Amino acid sequence: MEDGLVEAAEVGTPQGSILSPLLSNVYLHYVLDIWFQRRVRRHCRGVAFLFRFADDFLACFQYRTDAEALLENLKERMAGFHLELAEEKTRHLEFGRYARANAYQRGENPKDFTFLGMTFFCGKTRHGAFKVKRKTSRKKLQQSLARFTDWIRRYRNLLPTGDLLRQAQMRIQGHLNYYAITDNSESCQRYRHLTRRALFKWLNRRSQRKSYTWDGFLQALRHVGWPQVRVRLNLNPFATLNG
Image (cartoon, rainbow, N blue to C red; front, side, top):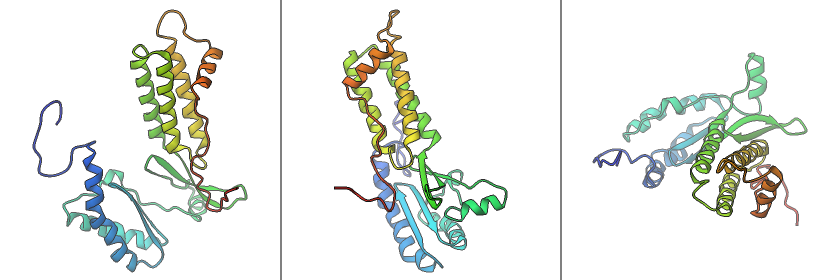
């Protein structure tokens, strides 16, 4: 259904439908996952990994020639199942422990990539060793901020203040539950700070008289248990658990 009109289609699935990721998982399990495991990986010179979520996937190879071979064969494989590779979303890049040094030798910056809302980039540990780091992608951060601001503008006069603050708290918590991972505290703090400012701004625009002073606003946030930025998922490979 689009703009209130129902149109029958024999190919594809409705954009945003809950059926789309389900069918993607079933179809691509055979088109991509099994093919990669039984055919592609066996012909690789080095190690190879595939990570897929619905119709988004990431393939990692030890050797560049293996990556180029996949890219060459992938279009033919997908065409055999009436699928197309999204060229504008497909990237082929060097990444890993040697990528930074190699890029600097060419006078370039090391490449990064975005997968499932996270930007992955080459970083270092405090001891100078290579480390994969992640942060909220700029696009996803802007989209999340825009959605929150739009929500508070539309509902600030429709909900009692207490309900509004509690729903805002749940929205912030939901964002942090996904994005508060190792090395991403800075992006999460930025999101928390900007949403708090937006909430304060639009609450005080409900009438000519300000609803809150800043101190009173912070006290109200403490009352509803405003989320703190704490790492929900520790991705340090050698991290140990205490207790």
